[in-house]
Amino acid sequence: MLVWVLVDNPACQFYAALGGEIVHEQELTIGGKPLIEVAYGWVDIGNLGTSCAVQQFRCTPTVER
Image (cartoon, rainbow, N blue to C red; front, top):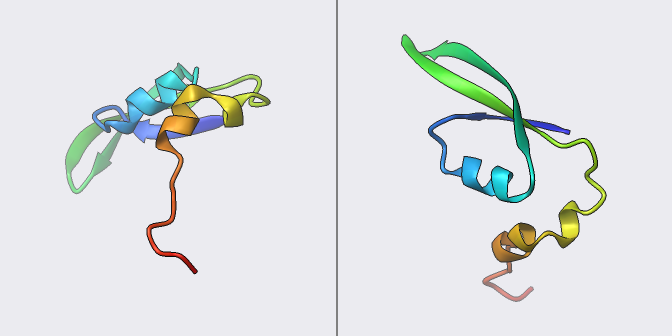
C-alpha cells in the first residue's frame, strides 16, 4: 500500500507511527509553489487495524444516531 502526502503535512507522523517507510519522493508545483511529496509504503498491511497508532486516532461519533 502507498500513501502520498506533502512532506510538511503533520499526518506524516501518523503514517510513520503505522510503520510506513518513505519509499519515494517527488517535487510538484501547486499554485506556482514548488512542494515536496513523499510516498509512505507498507509491504504487509495485515496488522494495521490493530496498531496502537490506529487505536489512538480512531474516530468516535459525537452524536448518537
